Image (tube, rainbow, N blue to C red; front, side, top):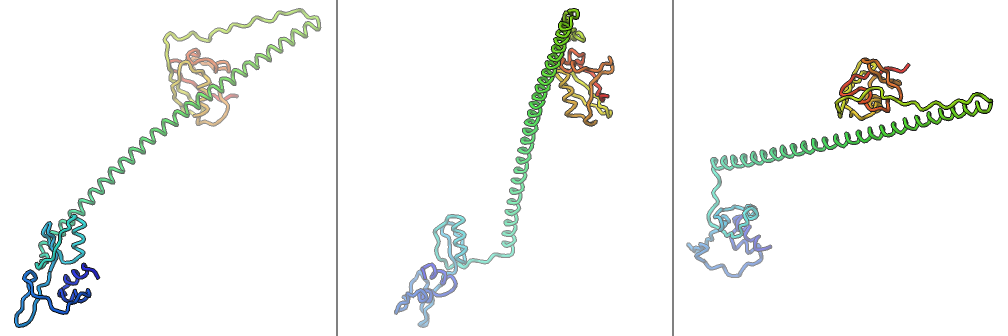
Length: 288
């Protein structure tokens, strides 16, 4: 048992002699009376004043139990305590209500601070979500644009290869005709001079950079899209293939005024050359 245990026993109401006896420090002679301990002898009997509370010498507060002292020391960092003969006065009903009111106010303030913190966290999460959504949308749009460019380049190469293949076949047919005529003694025929391709329409007077096309599908719905005036008609066909809602049948593009059905060669021409600048209506028609 430590000296702290002796103090606790004294706080519980035991005399100092009994506390020391329990601690194993009993002396053979009784303690002489001391003024500071309030010892008196009346009629041969010895009376000892017992400490009724523990006082904090730093702030003057009284405490009834050791637990209250330890809590106060941990909360305020006060370390100067001593025994006191003053009895800690119990709180009155008014003081109890005041203490309860302060506790409720403190709890209410803590709750408001917590709710305010939760609102700020929710706003920050929403801001980050919106920012992340915008970044994802921008990245998706960039990927779609890059994919569109790749598809246009691929379609352009395919068209060029098809055109070159058709030209090789035509050249081979002409060479075979010349060879057969020479073999069977027919009249020598000079190959026709290469045809000079005339532009289908004069270039527009004003240099438009973009054109806005309204594309009418076979089901009556319409698509609206802005293209560069230098883009080829094949870009319009690719856009229709990726966004149409009227099925997957083969189709052709045409205009109603002036009425014109675009040929395969027209798909390699810029929109400004085909007269589709600065705006036009393009009709999707099913191939027969």
